[in-house]
Image (cartoon, rainbow, N blue to C red; front, top):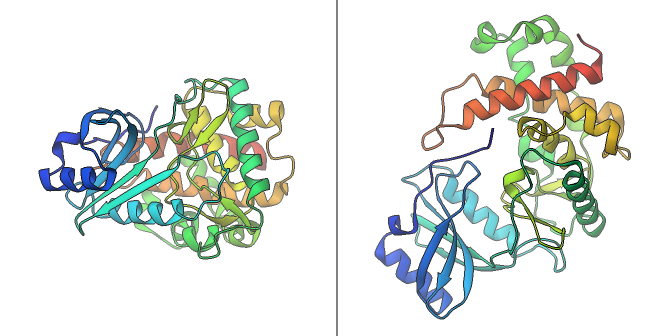
Length: 314
């Protein structure tokens, strides 16, 4: 299952916004090819300019979703501060009229990872994450929040269920049986997930590009924060299994991507992430994101199987 929003096309942008983009780039867009993947309801397109140059354009307004424009603004802020030399697209321009937010990046000659994931491409993705962590520890952007500060309110789902949240009646039998244990472990995840590396915090196949030479480029950085280097791998692994690739516990045993992480810290963060997916999947879809909850439910099932394996909870 691929994350997929209902995206707008270049032609949906108001004429005056298209003109502002042309002014920022010094040439109008001649053609735009929409790119699949991701949950954003906005534009994501490889564009050809009238002067022959190419670029990648992301655009959204409050009409598509109330929160996405601010995410684009945050991504622009992060992109301007990412250190040179990282495997990320070069940021070119932002056009922001208060309603529409347009981001322009260099276009990357690359493709998403194969689906299902291959072990070779997984190993390359993990190596890229290790390289980014090595180059950005300590985190070079002091204004970024920590992973715990960014997600502290969201990753409390098991504790809310244990306290009597109305969704407790809809949870699956495994969660109901182990809820007190899960809530206690979740209560410790913030202390476990401390670190000072730059963290992407949203690594999935749709945010990765494989270049023809086999190197990896990581795109879409609105959730960047500071935390332990292993966080991105833990958060990424359930989506690998969801895309038809190897299960998280198989990847652990084959590639050992979490070799440098404290196993108990991994367990506590995985509990919090699993609870988020399982419980969020029970909620209604947000405006403009009609496939989000089904994706979260499916990812929660993969994460839950991994968690049960790690904790020995049948």
